[in-house]
Amino acid sequence: MRFFFISLLLLSALQLSAQDTTFVKVYYGVNLDLRSKATAENQYNGVTIAGEIGNNGLVIQVDSLGELSWARTVESLNSTTQFTDIINCADSGYVVSGKLVSTNGQGVKIACIKFDKFGDTIWTRKFDVFSGTSENIGRCAVSELYDSTYVLSWSDQNANRTMIVRMDPSGAVLWDKVLTVNHLQLMEMTTPADSMIYIAGIDGTTGGVIVKVNPAGEVQWCKGYPQFDLIDLSYSGNDIYGLYANTSDQLGVMRLDTAGTISWMNTYSLNYVNGFQPPGVRSLTDSTLVVYKGQDGWDDKAIKIDTSGNVLQERAVYMELNAMSRHIKGGGFIVGNGPLYGLKTYWNSHIGLYKVDKDLFTESCSYVASDITTNTESCVPNTINFIETSGVQQENLNAQIIVADIHTDNNCVDIWGGVEELETIHVEVFPNVTSSSVKFLFEDEATNSITIHSLGGEEIFCNTFVGNCLEVDVRHLESGIYFYTCSNGSGTMSGKFVKM
Image (cartoon, rainbow, N blue to C red; front, side, top):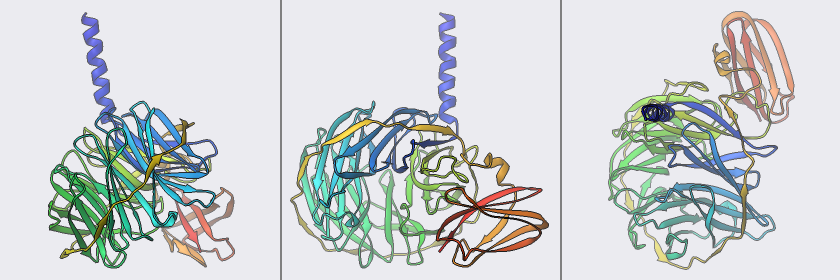
């Protein structure tokens, strides 16, 4: 009996230790591109990721140590499956949502699938859209209400309509609403402690929009936030936090009450580049928030702020950030798309996962950023007019859902060695987008080397010189992404540039 209790204590200690462990993981397929799109915390204190594998949808569940529990791929006949959102349900299952884009000219549908905690399919549904073109349907968001019903929402910009559908636990439609709001591009939907539905998006003419809907489908208010494009929503208690981009394409956070009134707005020196994975904001268990920005997969940043908008921590990582889920012990999981560092030894895209502590710290593949500045902003919300109708059509989704062949690697993956060996010198490289030349400025006059590889790994330039500056002519290169390695006796640094 004594041995049993000692073993139990040791097992509990190991489990607690695992929950506090930070790590970096890579998930990849064989000859297939993987891309993450959204995450949800799970019952194993880990994270479940929704995204894409090739032309199919992908859902993978990992535990608190990043070990793969299960993976599923979703294939729909004559369509590509693009998941955009996932939630962890009260019954420990998951609901994922996204769109089905026809490969034979039949337009686009909205998909919604319920999985149990073991990855088995509970039900599948699909919905018609009005315009039928993929370009006009962006994010499809899903959320769970207090009574284990689900709300699905998406926008059809071409048809000038935003759809909201409430489904019961079996996926049957309880009600649907069609809101006509001026070319609204839906970016996020959330359901805070007040059990209301908040939908944020970008108006085609003025700026950000938030629509508040009660569980019965009745619109409470619809407000515009001129000059500020609303990109994401999160909440802590009954406080709502909106991530926005201002007219200078700088990211910021506004705190709102349940009436849509702003209490503060802070803008940070984080540039928003449209066309990449949208940035986001997430609340953590210690009542702080994390703002993350994924741009080019290189030197992307996450910052931790308090509920007054003050910056607490900053971290830069080597991948295209696109989602975050919190962890019960503080901190959370930051998910994105590779490469995490350098050139991949297998040339397909992959998913990267950082487990970070409450200070956004992890053991490798990242560093502390210290260049974030803060400015205050102001905005006077106005009332947005809308037309309310109904008429969303639902049917069962016929899809093949099978086990996905996913592999994992620990830590950073590169062709030169570990990240600790590489990032030991500083070199200024500019411009990072060019049509003519790239200049490399080393800190010291020394024997320095520069090597440039193509995206396929081919060495296209190598030069060793004595001095601290070298300008490389790239006019003869084809347009695309190129990777460079700068080295001397003190160490090595790597990066990339774009040839226009």
